[in-house]
Structure formats: C-alpha cells, structure tokens
Length: 137
Image 1 (cartoon, rainbow, N blue to C red):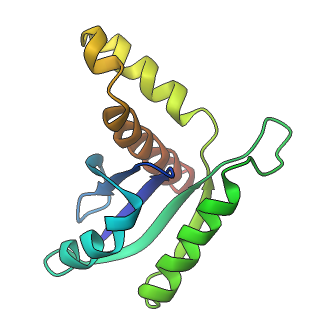
Image 2 (spheres, helix red, strand yellow):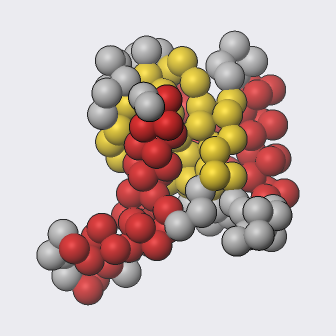
C-alpha cells in the first residue's frame, strides 16, 4: 500500500505518494482544498493508501505558524472521512524553500520556478521523503 503526503495551503494542496513498496516518493498532483476529498476518494478506488502524512507548519521557535489552524482542520477532515487511515503530522519547515531550490538547480526556466503548483507538489515530495528517511534510520 501507498503512503500519501500533503503540503496544505488554503489555495492549493500539493500531494505526493510512495510507490506500493514505499521506497520512492513522487509528486502526484496539486488540488484546490475544496476538491481534495473527492479527489482522494476517486484515487483510493484504485490505489490503496496505508497512511496520510500532513505537513505541520511551524515557526523557527517550534511554535505553530499562522496556517496551523487550517492544517489541523484539514487533518481532522481526513480523519473523519477516512477513519481507517492513520493521519500523521510531520514538520514541514523549509520544504517550500527546498522545493524552489530543487527547481532552480534542475535547470528549469524562470516560468517553471514561479509555478506555485509545481513548488507545492515538490514540497509534498520532500516532506514525504523526509518522513520516510526518518523511519529508515
């Protein structure tokens, strides 16, 4: 089964998913928050998901950021809608900056670097890879 990670934003949610063997994290999509539950229901008709990992926004001093309230609401919606799938919060500090740096280093043009949907998807991939590497130590 797959593990799915979310980089939640009030305008877009970046989604990443593992392969069935849970070895590699890849970007899946970027979805508007109002469409995410229908998207997930449709996705899970064909692909089983074992766990959700939700990026937890924190300040540098480890306190919740301004968007933490929205992220917790999203996590609660996941728990209520998919009660059999555990939801785990995971520190997402620096994922957006790392995603932007990754895009820049890839040689993509300025237009690609400014594509917020791409940044959100790559942020979700970085979040999921970080979560997986924590388990493999």
